[in-house]
Length: 255
Ligand code: ATP
Image 1: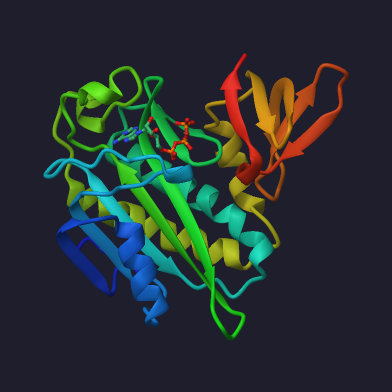
Image 2: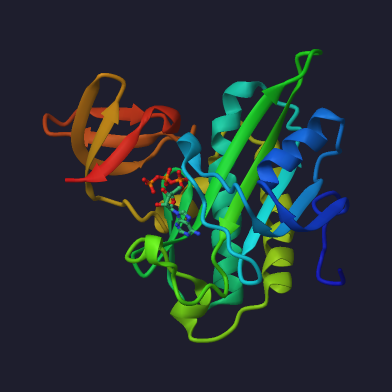
């Protein structure tokens, strides 16, 4: 594509009409040795997934369903930062292609427009026999979905619904891959989320909000007080104590 301005992201590009899940396909390719930057895109998914095996509604012809293979040469403790790198990249690309919209990043893995979910990100890591690991970063982005299917009424929206115009999936995908590769490379050279933190905090959907977080066997209540450099959500409790919450262990809801 003449729109793509990357070294590795999207240079191997698998475009499919239909797939069970782009993440499942990309994980299979990665196990067979697919290079970093390998991209799987499908026009529709029959078994699109979110976290905890929740379904991702994936009708044909309108949205982006995309997964990217990464092989970060870093200890696996840094992998939980990757969904936030992806979120920053997708947020930037959506803002570039739809400057009339105000999009927010909902920690740890969603994009919100007009109070509704427009994008979900799902990162999966696997270790290899030689102790290296690969990561598949998948996202579903509602681009020209209109109307919102019944089961997502009040939950989801799309770029077309919010802008009132059609948005080019090819342009948007190229903008995402261009930006994600740049941010990913910068992130690899840093110790933590570092230079991405200001943008992540500026566009945070949960900024300063009252939250309840279900963690293991306890429930924490407090207000959002920013992000740690490791991508943990900082929750300021009633007594002033600030607790870092890791994404994997949290289910949050507004108080
Ligand atoms: P929650 O939405 O409860 O905060 P989450 O952000 O982790 O959880 P995921 O598991 O990543 O959500 O995504 C699955 C959920 O996203 C589904 O339960 C459904 O509510 C919603 N969803 C499914 N398909 C779409 C879609 N195409 N657009 C927007 N939201 C969707």
